[in-house]
Length: 378
Image (cartoon, rainbow, N blue to C red; front, side):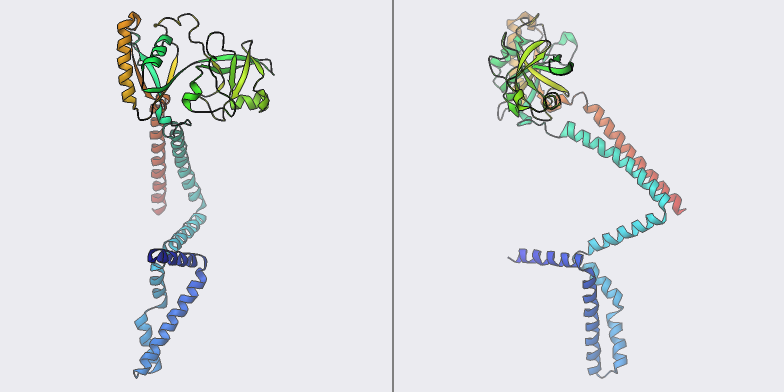
């Protein structure tokens, strides 16, 4: 096809001009000299002497270097050659003035380094998708109790149960409770970050263990919480990445727990540094059977093609129904917010301020280098 033939020819010329520059220059010199000789012969045939014909040919062609420059400006890859010459000129200039070069490079380096670091951090926290299956369908669900003067509070277990049964916008609703446990029995005792979770949490997030399995019912029901899933870091550090740890027993707060799985490297939900996950029995304990006791964090996965707005409309309707039924819920409402937005809610303002500061540092660096250039010129 003509298009691909033209593209192939352009690529061949580009590679030739780039890798065989000296040969191309020699061929260009030969071609110009050959053209000059043809002009001389033509003018001799017209009756001019050879010396006059040679002078006339040179005048007609112009200076050979000028012709070569014109050809070079339009040949394929000329921009790369110009860039190479500019870089060589810049390097020579810096070598001649090493003090100025060091100050300029250091100034630019500080500004660009700070900006790059902050942008990378913002990308990983605010922009990069969460490492879960279809993370745009994940939300956090919170209660609102105006009498507490808080924009959001944790969820009462009984309300969580009602949401599971009545709110149809969610494919799954899971809950968790942050805490710490004492790990003993295998090596030096240590206190590690732990999370108690409903058995469906990992399924809701869409993350599979690399060894073993998720929690499964009836784990998480009364008397069925003595199982554990380990983080990848704890598995490597404490148990030597031994796959045989699954099926063995470890001691958490002095109680034996059967290890049933190991999570992938980098899995940190719901916070960094989590080492152990165990099932939560949210029905046990003081206040678990009261709608005024709030201690569960709830994460939900929306059904396909269901928006957060639709889920919030259902949550509002169910909350109104519960408020009519239970006096403790008289001022209660609930709302869902995308998980990534919720996780970044406490850091978004700080990160944006850091980004503004980094950009300001870069602008100051540019202004300083410009000032150095003006001073050197003066």
